[in-house]
Length: 126
Image (cartoon, rainbow, N blue to C red):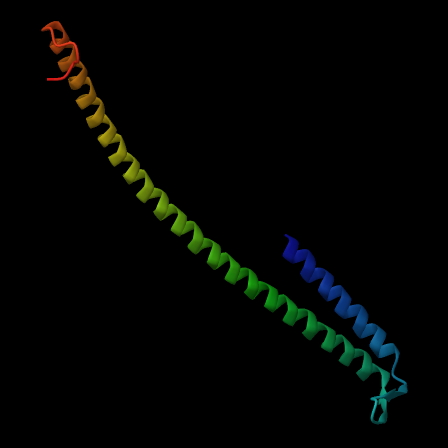
C-alpha cells in the first residue's frame, strides 16, 4: 500500500513539474562557472528534475544494497549461533549422562561406607 502511495505522489509531482516547465518557455542565461549559455527554461527545469531523480534513485539503490548485505550477514550469524546452540545442547546431554553416572557411583560409595561402618571399620574405607 505504501508503494502505491509513493507511485501516485511521484506521478503527481512529475505532472506538476511538466506543467510548470511548459509554462516557462523563455530563454534564460545560465552561468556554468567557465561559460554562460542561453537555454530555454523548460530544458533547465526538466534537466534539474532529471538530475535530482538520478541522485535520489542512486542513493536508494545504494541503501537497498547495503541493507541486503547486512541482512545476509545477519542470516549467517543466526545460522552460526543456531549451530553452536545445537552443539552445546548435545554437549549438555553428554554432561547430564556423566553426572548421572557419577551420582550412581557416589550412591554406591555411600552404601559401601555404611556397610563397612557396620562391620566395625570406623574410617569407612574398604
